[in-house]
Length: 122
Length: 107
Image (cartoon, rainbow over all chains, first blue to last red; front, side, top):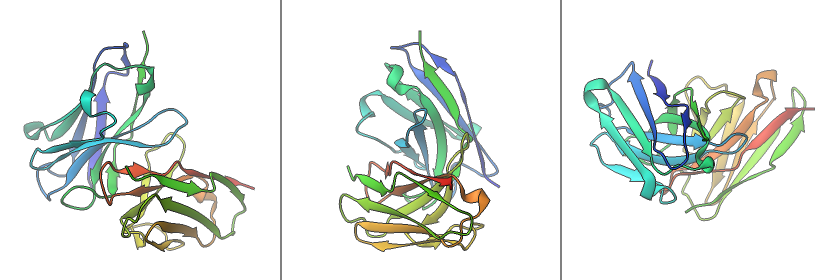
């Protein structure tokens, strides 16, 4: 059974960079032609897709965040990562990593991590 | 961006009720729609994709339908474990977008 687990700093100061990692177990991040996404949810609000990295390493970011987002993959560790720069209080949210269930990118999310709360505060 | 609008934003229902939630896209999405259930403090759980395909392990009381811009999630007989927030998501084009959610509460 595929499992995803987020980790990283839970408290980030304004203007600094948020860094999170998603460790994948129970399957290889490089197999199956899947894409791997980051999604966030501000407290009490809805879901916002941040971007994905394709199994080939190509990326696509939400234009609303594109200038501040970097998603990368470390195949040797079977994990992928998110960096979000110049954070403000508006970036406070639960951050989820997820796998896209259809191959080729741009699909539904069938496996999710449990989520990690990141608070932006001085 | 494709905007996804769910209605209602919340509803109250009783165990055994038939519940319908609607999701409208700002443009046609060719059945590229998924539905999720989220309980407090938990990650969303995939229920259906391709508008009407039930994810493995999801009870058959959940069903989906629709075409073009208008889609529906139906719970045929609401169970106690179904009280949650439901989201639709389009994957017709990037950026992938979600509806604002529908909270199903106990009447």
